Length: 462
Image 1 (tube, helix red, strand yellow):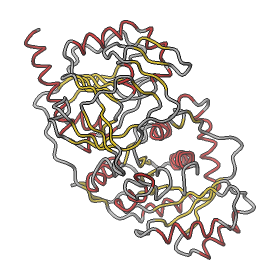
Image 2 (image 1 turned 135 degrees about the vertical axis):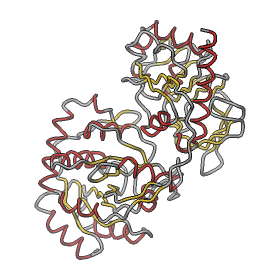
Image 3 (image 1 turned 120 degrees about the horizontal axis):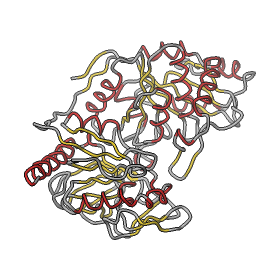
Image 4 (image 1 turned 180 degrees about the vertical axis):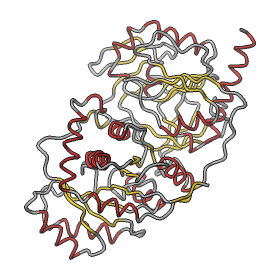
């Protein structure tokens, strides 16, 4: 069991584009400037927002996803990630009530707030509005059954208008308190691309921008009030799933560089707890796979933006191909899957040779392909488990493949849409879906058991 006091605050929004990530990072930086030690989390399956949290805190940020896990596991992960922190700041996803299929509250920010009993500060973008924010806020407060919305932060409000708006909101909706505002900033802080925000390292002078933003929010937001609100959160009670560690460790090579940096902190931590020694390497810069690797995890990322560099690293491409064809267990997700193709198309339409483990071509499409949450069912035995095993997953990609495989069935959690996916070659499982191992701990255990058998065979033959 994981329980105890855990001051926490969930920052939600009326809709996407309200400034959640900017304000979350600014508040994290402002809390740090005050001498506090915050922990950061992100609702949903997003990878990039957690990178910004990490850049602010210098610590890994966690994901809280109520589609991937049950309630007790999610609360355990929150409690575990909050250990040693003065308060936790949880960034919401999309609009507060937006969940599966756009019509369900399942897997929404509001569900995470209710599961964790976290007080919510709702970010309301007031651009083009003044008094109209009152019925908007009232509608959100009245609609929510669990009544977690207790605070309001107004975005893009003039300093002259703010005092009157604050007084009006608190008079008309006495169950909430307005904790401050963010003025209209001279320029946007975070830039976007086809998969969302650019990564932190791609934004010039990000640290300086965050310090400036922290300074602004220290003047315009009631940080002491938000800290006090976080203190009202009740004790967390969660339950960790049972795990079965290996009797001896295995070495797991894991991609980690500019091209392959989409991974869930919780996945890596779980693999370590199960007995994996993680050895990070770069397909961009290293010449070959780490020595004596017993398994390979090719994470997602933006390989399509580094096609020339990846292609020119012929030594690494040959090393990966030789190792997998030699029986090295390998799980390749999305970007890692693209890297295994014969060729990968760059954003300008040029094809570049990749590892050549798979015969197909990876190419760009004009829109998102098969995106969102899926439930995956294995049609045959694989390195993640037996035929019939099910896994929660997520897809989000503009690139597609001529060889997507058919060993798994992916089904949307709402509606009737489904498709075949995943290439399964015994020691290799590759495809677009991303896996979250706390959604099926047995899958992680099975993968490492396959790596252990490979280790045993390698040592016997060596």
